[in-house]
Length: 113
Image (cartoon, rainbow, N blue to C red; front, side, top):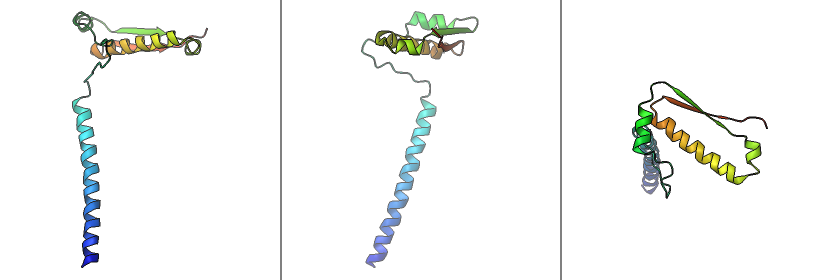
């Protein structure tokens, strides 16, 4: 009887583990679908929060716009200030893209020096 009880507990633990993993995957998929466009700016100075005026301008674009950032990665590696600034510019431009309802595309060009 003790052996049968141990076997039942093992089966129960296995089933509980599988159900737990399935629940975790389901919650992850539902959360991803529900909050796909949710963007939160957690920086202290709200660096990546666009103003109402910027949202209005981006919402009123009449034709598609292509933004290009010309940034040489190999040269910037020697200058941390430039590298950090370029990262901030990329992040802000990514916010413009996200707020433009598909009217803005953005690409980074890596020109040769």
